Image 1 (tube, helix red, strand yellow):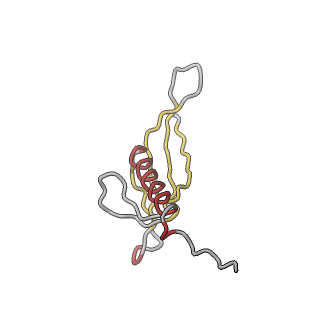
Image 2: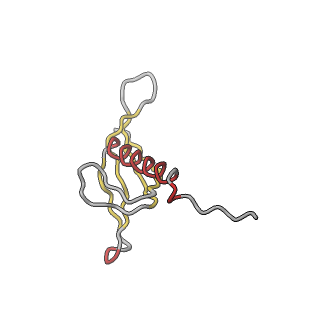
Image 3: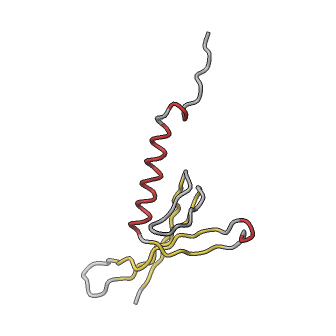
Length: 104
């Protein structure tokens, strides 16, 4: 069985949760690792996702440690959507705007 792994980075601007996991993770950059297997018997090369992981770096007394958490693509996309919606809401609020300079 031929496998491949790809990684990418996602950025959360606000603390977030994934799926039903009650642990809130801090805002920041996170590495996402996707594992896929080659589908056999096709006339073209195609892969099927077998696992998605989020790399969570330790904090406090666990600093320097990292944990790969199994997540679903759906939960990740939903968390990113909520984060983007929060950002857009805050971007358009008066509280998020910086005061205008006095040009007189």
